[in-house]
Image 1 (cartoon, helix red, strand yellow):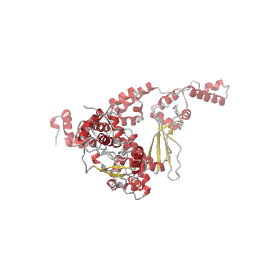
Image 2 (tube, rainbow, N blue to C red):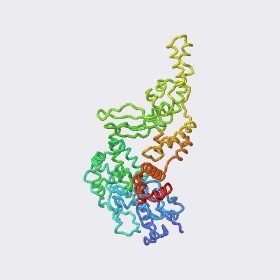
Image 3 (cartoon, rainbow, N blue to C red):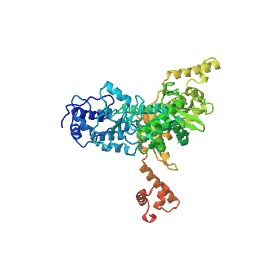
Image 4 (cartoon, rainbow, N blue to C red):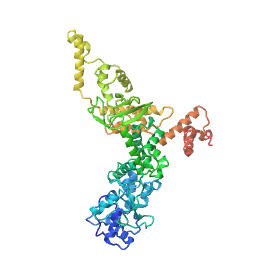
Length: 579
């Protein structure tokens, strides 16, 4: 393996394709095959402008003074971050590996072959950037932000991009063509003719959003996580008619009213809305990053016009937490209750409250308690043991006495309050018979107890109680009819600590171990359903036929063999009719 003696210094935002083309021009290689052989050690490498391959071989041949490793070549000089901005971490890694070894599979990994927005036919440039390059660098080069699919204007100057004379269909797949004054003519035709000048600012905003993906790509998320993100934004913008149902007509009408002027320049996606519906539903196919950018642009416009609860973060109102009244809530779940927009504000400590907006007056209601979370149980037990009255407990917890009583029943805390160490009778006797003075001294004593006793969570005791409750709850749920699968989320909801157990798994080792032990795989749940149907049919004297059992258990015919095995293990062969 030979090391290159020279490699050109990169210009700002230069494409790797442009670097390699300038290398060929500066070195004066006689042919493209000799260039590829010197750069990659392989003369069959495809000169891709967006996701080039065999970059590990190129990085190993760079001169010692050029300190670019293979990952830096991918991140700084290709369009990798643009095409992988909205895919999972696994897909990103597979695409990166494909670019290190060979680019043929990178397009397949990212689903680019199914994109409605097609790849470029010509390399492009910005007229304003062209003049700036000649002034500052004395030569032209291909910029990354000009070659992004879907971008029609320059993200810096807002000028409509122009097609160069470098056309991919007319040249060789292995050709490296540098940008020159000849192929980037000042009289080149623009990629589109923008008749409405009011559209240019929106096209520039979209170009800036896409260009930002190259420098600061978002954290990798699965398609389901992106769908959840968009649904939260749509709920905040008021496009939900029920708690989990999108008002499709209202959403599409609002999108087209704001974005039809942009869609007019994209005939591939302007005539149908299936890509838009897929983004806000469960995503099963790859969707072009420009479509993501367009939806985010629309939701941002809607969000600016509809911020019912203002910009976050919001205050936590948990009186038992040290961070009470601090802005620790960063996300709000929104849904509609009849005609009211309801926001659910939930803190990491588990405390949650709601606020709603009157659609007629636009007035926001005061906070309404929803749930306390795990901090309530140890405090409420201690208050009951110390003999606090129901009203005193309600004052401390900032709740109604009836709500405190209900919470005590839900937590299985005895409603019988033992007598206080200093009862009203004792203080009455010590106060010389003044009942008002006695009551005042008793209240003062209880307030002192509040200030002197910090409210801390007994994690060890809470862990033992939750583990025991979880085991009892799992046994009870297995006997429920209709049958329910014992999933982690179902158990958390039934326990009353939805999403909280996993967040505090390090403080609750026994509970997490018990949760792991009792949760049920899909295959186990299917077998339990089959066994339950067999028992039910036996008690009702229904013929034990395989097709009947599959239908009653809601299983497809692919499970026929499993049902036959279970029947053979539980019944005599003569009792089973296999049809």
